[in-house]
Image 1 (cartoon, rainbow, N blue to C red):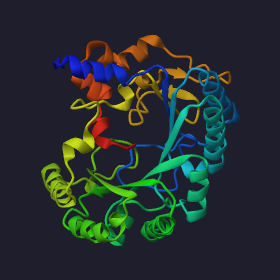
Image 2 (image 1 turned 90 degrees about the horizontal axis):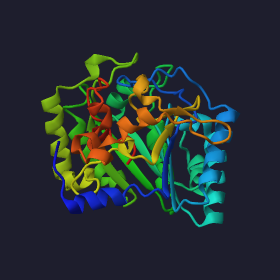
Image 3 (image 1 turned 180 degrees about the vertical axis):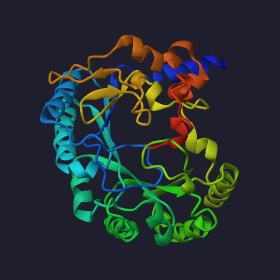
Image 4 (image 1 turned 60 degrees about the vertical axis):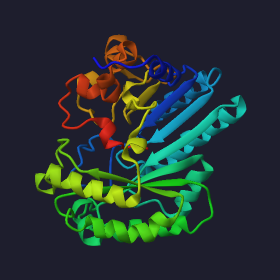
Length: 341
């Protein structure tokens, strides 16, 4: 077990204030894309009214003792269920305003449906942070991130991005730049182009990732780059972007903490199942409860305890990636995936 200092321990304990709640909501697990490295199976559709009611009941019940509420929207593609996103978000906004709760919300989206009008609706609902993935220029991006019908997506995403950045609104976009086998030799040149265009806007920041084998029915292994080559390209981009990688990935000082390790963080899937990790969807270990219409999470305490053991034992490995610690068979730690900034 890795040793931590008393100061680090105090920071860790402060980060799990019981008056804080983090929810990662999947309003649908369907997606309009078929990315060549996606691990999801898109088997489940929209949240039912019962699950939506349960989430609202949970927020209302907890609002009396909360000081901070953060809702992250994930999928599938969450904007395929935009009405659910707006419904729950406005409800959470109202509760937070009434009770004086600090409310923040973010969304991981492929960006295809994030038009200027939809973006404005999201901002009005309190969703101010967006993560959008790009796989290089049009040729490379459209190979690895096509629509379900095989058509390209690059032009639409870039037009949407241009349109939302044309506003003077306050928000943040994290551009997640993927390095694949197809784009590895040309991705640096693409990065330099968007550095002088898109990344010049202070509301935009860059995150780079070498795509990895996370399994799933959509994986095409030919898209996976050589690990060492991919990492070299990533470091080259980061060095030019002038980012300190340690600062970018730091959590609680020098200790990296995955959200799945936090006792106050829960994933609620479209069918109402409650989990801790957004990657290990097919693991029985990850099904720690099921939300009822009353808002009860129905938590299995024995399963939950395994995910949050890092805060019990102050084990750095368990804090960094509890899924890896539980030996769930993931090829890469979730914290390295950084799906949600």
